[in-house]
Image (cartoon, rainbow, N blue to C red):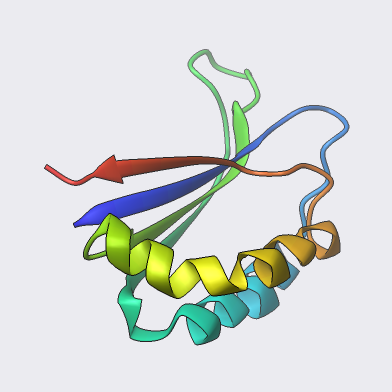
Length: 102
């Protein structure tokens, strides 16, 4: 199993619409990639290491797939459409990390 983490860096200038993200964007992604996407987790950054320190990421989306091949096959054809939706919910592009769940 793999996890595709989309990490949205936080700063004072960042905007992020969680209602749109959870109510429109993520359901669109789920619909487009279909059953290859086995699980989704959304995280809202609350703080950093020290008390009162801002979270390094305003949001993190964790998308789970059986393999890199299933991710690429299901996500690839829709990557442009999915990426084009980012300005509807955020002023920052997410950083992507693909990890193996061990």
